[in-house]
Image (cartoon, rainbow, N blue to C red; front, side, top):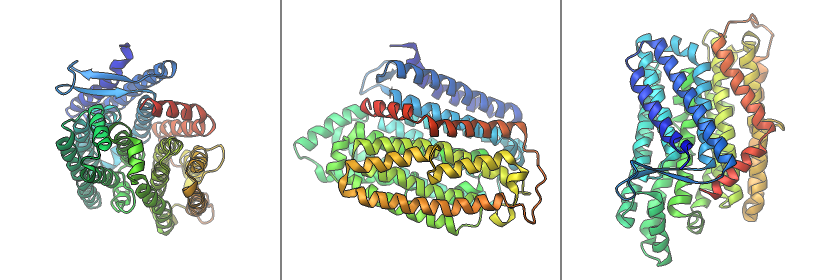
Length: 493
């Protein structure tokens, strides 16, 4: 086994240890340690990705070297390495860009707790990417949920606390459904490791046994993850949570937390049930319908909003709809497009929230759109970041969002009965995206009756936004290598 095979477990361990240590450090040192942990995990994940590109393979790492059913294991290939690298990069960039806001929004005595939760959140996300065991996935889902709720309420005011409780209630509902699916699946198969469950499920389907319970199990698992990933109509908690969070938290929550659950769902489709069985049971059609509604409903809600962070949050509902619609095609091409859009959305949405926070900070912390006139002149890097993110989400060529929308559109060819509906949805959704993003851009670049004097955003914010901007432009131009890694990764999944 190559030495880099130790890196996934090392990243999970490093973030957990750094979280514990940061809880007893002073605020500035705790934040520095948080950035250090994200940097190390990014470096290790990048090295693993480079190894996987040169030698595409799938590696199973047994914890303690004990085989099933006594041992636990993680499994990774090119796709897992790519996702871990991008997610660690987003965590690092968000922490850097959001440092100034964190020390303004959160009491200094609570910063170390904030850093503890950030580390635990990254640890749980990496575990969900790498784990090959369903019950371990559930454990880290709960860690993820509690950490995310703590980050939402980090400001400590009434709005953030009520938003955190709303988030907690919906998340626990999703977790409960997912746990119920694991319990039922274990009672039917007698296994918790994904490959073992897969073998048992194939036998059950081949002999036509337990088909009704199996369908119910899949329904519980899919619904639970749909709730946690804010798929329509389970999205009502999303805008409150993202709006109430401090800059780094809202960027990370919108960018990578919901995506970790979608990755787990893809694992269940491929490694637990079998993608061909999901299609045979018509589960993908349900996802297609819900995703289609989300694409339009999310955009309409965004048009109605008057606060910039809520506009960006409602846009997430629409973009998550794109991911589930692509998955709902029930084809390999659709799944490749779904994963690509998930990566694009993670990078772009995190940048949009970081940019929004910069525009709000340059406008005396006023969040309503009417109070952000000229904000892009007061904080130029935030204005540039928002424009690039907006053009990406609209789907303008040479920006990241165009590549993923193009792949979703071309993937529809592999599902002729859905092609016409999907192409129409993309066209309508793109127009609606343009309506609310152009509205925001026109306001933040409006010089009339507005103060355009520059406000210092700090070097850390400029660095973080620059990292986001470079990553988004690079993905928009050089997306083909990413698609190739996704394609190989899904074949090895």
